[in-house]
Image: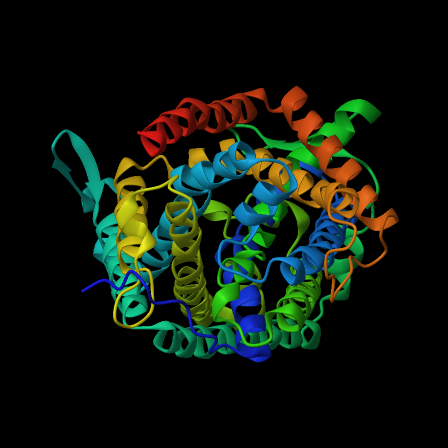
Length: 473
């Protein structure tokens, strides 16, 4: 039976927390997104710059969150920070967006990524029309069913207690970190100087790369304003690949010495992943011609690099790496996400049942409602579109959260701050300005992806007031 009085037990150390940060960040993105990024910016130099900007923003945000996590070392993370900095409505809008698409959509996308790459070993999972069937008017692919089975399995595992989820996270994150380091080392070992020099020949020209029906490659130079838009557009991919670093803050109630370990794990985890991401892209550029990367089949740039490094067996090597990566990533996302709904439910802003813990001291009901939503997004086939739509909203909420540090310094000047934001006020201010510029550029140059994202957020306003009215009755 659910326990209404139980509370979370701290059982995760610094290493476990760091594995959750890194494991939640590394999914399928690093193996895929550089193709579209190259199409947007058109050169090796600007590709690396886009990843470096993303890395700087991620590290700055992570170090700023350290102050907030030390002030509010309890389950809920960003939802709690926004509620305390602004008001319950802003916190709820984040929590609503988190449930509607940010976390559940990411879980769905990562699950399907796992199933797609399993198709290298099981032909019925290959992304082809022959591997589909109709169900209630929906065209369902067998890979979508495998994604749902994976999500259900990991949800079930996490209902058995935080220790089980911790073991999976540690094993799979360690494996994929070692695998990525192995790919990087192998890439430097077979470093192809002719390809490297050719890729860097026009490294600082901002241009779109397009491919005509006859296979002709076209390069379209970009003016300054449009070029900035292209950089922002390309960063949708790198930001998606670097997102979910804040998941560890959602499980603060289960981390030992959270005032120290959350901030430290955020820094260590994001630093490790940032270094890996930049080095991985350098390996891509050192082994595969630029146009082959930009127009890799199904955007699988890592497959092109792996084939160049390991030969024909490279396809299977990279498929196994991505399956390991997505499996571990989804475990971290599932483990952490339910804690947000648990905290919202305790504030009477989510389903009441989500506020309970089971006999294993985990929010089982919240885990299963998250599972149902993510599974529905798997079946809809629209999870990828939803993630694109919400990408700038995620950054907007990050900016709001970091601005909350400035608000709380005035609002709660005497509050205990065991850890203070690194580089305050300069670095947090730089992050906020960069985030605002990113969002504005996306609104201008990618309106099809930004307005629907805002609409998803704004739908939460009437839902919030309905919840408030019910709470008062």
